[in-house]
Image 1 (cartoon, helix red, strand yellow):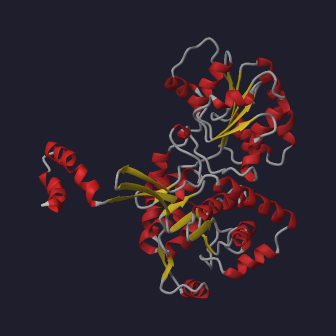
Image 2 (image 1 turned 45 degrees about the horizontal axis):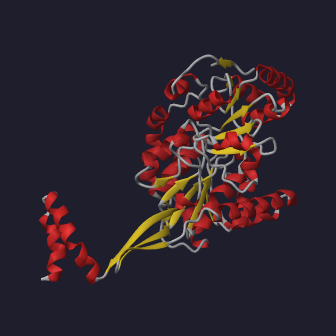
Image 3 (image 1 turned 30 degrees about the vertical axis):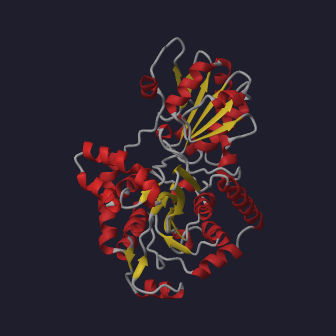
Length: 451
């Protein structure tokens, strides 16, 4: 099922490797052309556009765009107790993992009497997108909301697609997760239109909207206030929308369809590798699953495991499409050095390392959204409950982008405080630099203080 790319005996540059490796054919630029009218429509018509677009793309016209609080409390009351316990564990683990990311304020004395202080200030308001297409992702509520809460963000708004089966509201498990986290501003909006709503805000359309706002204690006719940052995973249209509004708001990254790479040698267990590749393939027919190995025997055994297991899985057709697509495959390499080079060129969203001395091999990897080390650290651990974040860069963007973390919601602010003596000591070199740039006013702003 997995096609093979044999790189043994070839010496390729990073760019050449990237060109021959399996990759999903996601054209974000083309998707941007398709979603621009959607963004413009939401910006111009607010809630009216959101309802029409929901009917067009989600097959349902939501009565309530802002989810009533009663729906949130009812969803939590009806949540399976085992799912609630699992979510509570996930929330606690993620709070611990994200708290470790918080930076500390510092004060540095540059010169006697001259200080630069480093402050870290959370943004005021964020929009958190939670997908709701082929699967339900309460875990994405946790990943987005916990990171923002730990960062100290005051206002959190969540958007997730309306569901025909639930009266035009998002899936109740998503609503339950929001209530569990204390996030009460939730919208039945999906795709590019939800991103547009967050970026530009949306006016109310009817009395239902205004009544929902009043019930939430919100005055005025603005259904959703614009946010400062939009985060969360989604399909290519969500990624395109985030690119389109970047600059109006901050974004985390263009997190697209999921991908996994497994770097494994002959010591890896074939069944473990196979089910890990399959676990991400069940997300979406466009999901990418890549095996990187120097062992033909392992590759053959993994193929056999996949062939035996896929037909009896719940999402067999979806999985078969993903594993057989151009975005998936097995890459044969000569040795672990070449395997590391391939992994870095690929820059996987999720990279598992199942080799001898897996920790040492993992330490050599530069480009990956998240690295899972050893046979007992499968990707689903990070998807749900490890304490790491599962909103990660895809499509090779791990070369320059990070997974979602508290820094997505925090700004660096430098505070400069010099006393008279410290400024006077800097006056001469500052004057020389100002003169070199033909900006005498800069020097005058300093020297006038000592006339």
